[in-house]
Length: 180
Image (cartoon, rainbow, N blue to C red; front, side):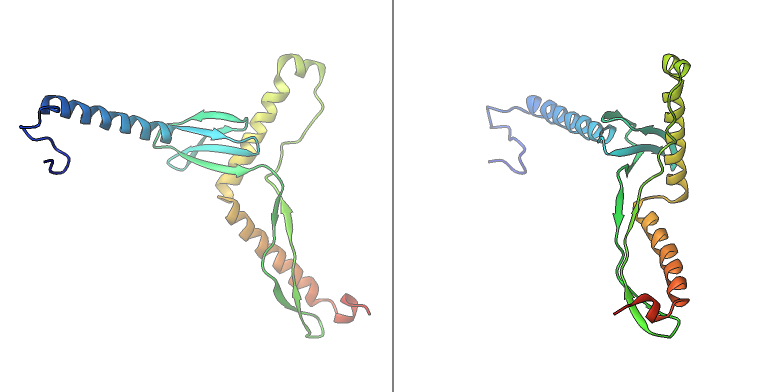
């Protein structure tokens, strides 16, 4: 009979001398698997991945493939594609105090580095791609440090667009907005 899975002295097939090394090997394998899952990550072609250490950006991954980091470092993933954000409808007053429900959407993305045509010197020395990578890294780092993430960016966009839209609607009469 086994109690909590431990072998007894009368069990002839598993001795304590063989049991504890197996447990130790299993524990080491689990630890290695956990460390590997924390250190290896995949970068999709549709995203930027920034590795940070204690909140400080360290390295930007822009190419698809595997990346490595220390287990205590963090990942920030940013979609590089065009984002569509559609906040809930809002009531706004026109100049003649009529209530209207407005719905809007915003298409946005993290700024791309300026694209310039390569010169003959830049293509042979590779300066254009290095400059573009540096500019891309600076752009994503600024986004990470100033905004923080996708939801924070969408929240800021919603506040600014709602304020601008409400101000414009407030200066406009209902008859100017709606025609029969």
